[in-house]
Length: 237
Image (tube, rainbow, N blue to C red; front, side):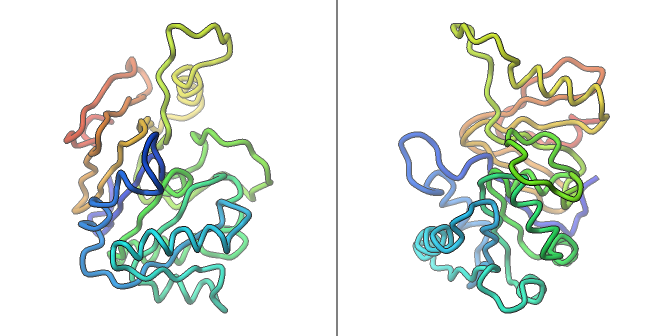
């Protein structure tokens, strides 16, 4: 069960077709971060951290929120411990997790989330909110110490979930087949978040929101659909 102190906004993707960076979740961000004046940004999923921070800073300025980047802080752990809210951006999940491990930030983020600090994740930042990164779509471009992540929710997430294309001639595994293979090795269920979908977690309740639904993968049960507005965790048991 999700810790009732956790306040999380977990977005499948920072950009969707035809819209700019975080445009499709601008209003959910504004509502979720109401009253927040500064967000501490974690840009480790991309190599160009300065450029990534500038992009986030420009977008959040439109919401009336100042962005402070953890990579520019003299003491990253102190920056997290003093953060009003945290935004973990997307990119490569393995690179993100490695830097969170190397900088010793998993514990401080977990502790602050347990104190009720708002946590916002997008794509890779959503992956690391799960117990592990075993259901990421990304290549392991770096070697992490292990695959364990923040564990802010008790289920796995697969951002950018793609349905099989019936017209495709590609013979590789579909996303569904890969997630079913994951369940052969782990009993932890998975929420496949489609583009433009997101999870808002408050008071111990994980609610699916956004323009599209999600697909749930649970060992011993065929995959099934859930629609926006559904409470997720009762469906995972």
